[in-house]
Length: 60
Image 1 (cartoon, helix red, strand yellow):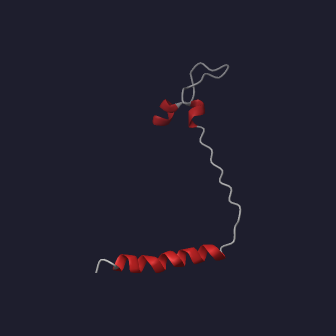
Image 2: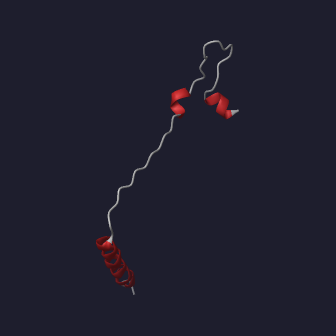
Image 3: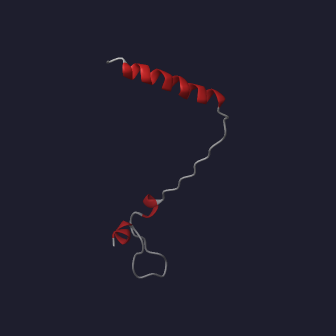
């Protein structure tokens, strides 16, 4: 009875390999931007009296 996982997984493995043989290739481009670290500390723009932004602002 311990051989049933092997007997079940072998056809599945062959099936997955056959799908890959007929697959067409394509280009996939993933764009991801995470600029949290750019303004982690608050900054003081010209002409402003108080600092703006930063992680403290996001925290509330």
